[in-house]
Length: 115
Image (cartoon, rainbow, N blue to C red):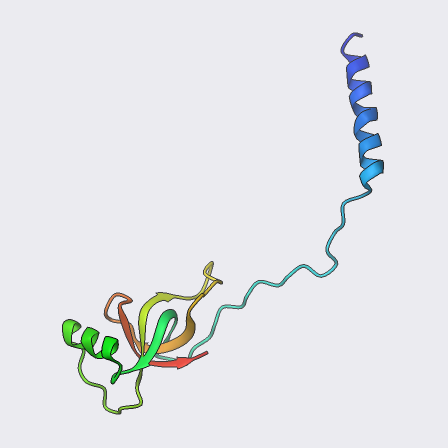
């Protein structure tokens, strides 16, 4: 019997508090998750910190250090410091791109196009 009185008091206090603050609002249209980017067959969706041509000083230095073959055309874009985009990785603070080759551990990716 002694336990019932405190429980009743607690229930009354909780209901009074709920009526003061009103019901919690439910968002009618919850935000939709960012869709997984889709790239053309043979390319990979990446988030790169920098996007530049092979003539860029940093890109050309990385190409030499990693023994990346020279691109066939001068307008080939490279991504620098890249991470995979996709499931569970909806946030990209860099450039979202699709790249043909990411064989250098994310340091540099070749043949990139913006998403």
